[in-house]
Amino acid sequence: MAASGATNDEMMDIGGAELDNNKNEKMFTLKKWNAVAMWSWDVECDTCAICRVQVMDACLRCQGDGNRQAGGKQPECVVVWGECNHSFHHCCMSQWTQQNKRCPLCQKEWSIQRMGK
Amino acid sequence: MSTPARRRLMRDFKKLQEDPPSGVSGAPTDNNIMLWHAIIFGPHDTPFEDGTFKLTIEFSEEYPNKPPTVRFLSKMFHPNVYADGGICLDILQNRWSPTYDVSAILTSIQSLLSDPNPNSPANSMAAQLYKENRREYEKRVKACVEQSWAD
Image (cartoon, rainbow over the protein chains, first blue to last red):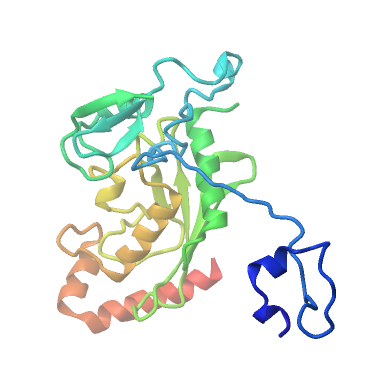
């Protein structure tokens, strides 16, 4: 109850408070404040629905044992966006389009809108 | 030996454990991640209710670009299940997508039990009874349900 009426100044006044028996008695004081920030990639579809790895990381195929020493990522393992705005690893999509030229998520005809990192 | 198909299956297994769909379960066999055993519980409010139907799922190294071979081990009486347990389901054939995983396959088969498609029958007797004599169809299905507890 005592803290509920206190102003911010009173709450932060840690050392210098003259303890007035009734009014200034503090229930708690703020001693330390840790701010935490979160971030995520600013893309619409952040996981490749084919291999289930984040599109910004190397695809499952490129994460293979033989490629690990090269940092895991092949230069051609980039993100590809279709006209339907669905995104995949270029590696995963080029395997799939060899047998079916449709987007695996919406079944629309697959055509590349852009490619990049 | 790790291959893209095996690594994808490890992810499928992890997802199945962390986010298990209701009414189905599956796991790789002891020493072969390319061969899985699965169970589908018969959906409520269907003649398959209370059944515990066992299946095998066999993957190739081309997974997920090619669908696995899924087969019922339990005896089934269903318009879209062949006598050998093979399943006639579009998403396991021409409508396959590499975005499907074990969880999606099992839930699709579970919904096939609720909603058979008698127009592309794998078991013509089951399809005919489903369309023309639902009581007899349900009787034959119930027999499979009881048999599923034993195997």
